[in-house]
Image 1 (tube, one colour):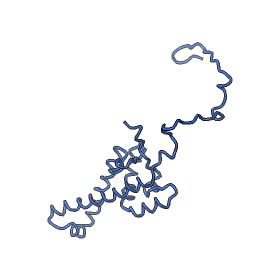
Image 2: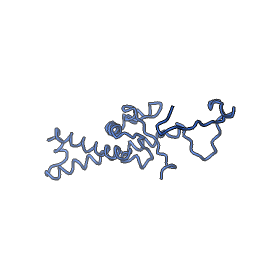
Image 3: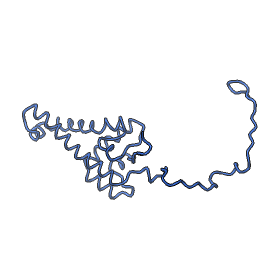
Image 4: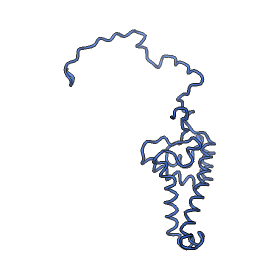
Length: 179
């Protein structure tokens, strides 16, 4: 047999009998104290950072929707309540698109929604399409914060409503490894 780049001389490899032992039968070396490990417990976000992220984003969502209603109401010269009641078929899609843009743009570009960076939580997903889909269910989860909080309390892994609906998981950002 000849490889693509020509003939290669055979190489003799000497192997000691100790090296032929399977790695499963070896005893793992203990990790020195103070070094980070790669276990599953360290990568999962804890309960309270997720609650803080969802609660702060719920407040942010209310503020953004209020401003999004004030601006057209001010331009037309009517109150936001009258604008909402009189033109609700136009206002609801407008508020939905403004709200989704608030979550979609940062999640697709950076993997974090607006408040995730403050609390050290990230979405470890490389695909922009999956991030965009998660941004939609995350917006729903934030809009229904009491239901999402109930899901976090009752689920054994403390998953938010967005995590339950999408199958993706929010994880703690590894701060010690970031530059």
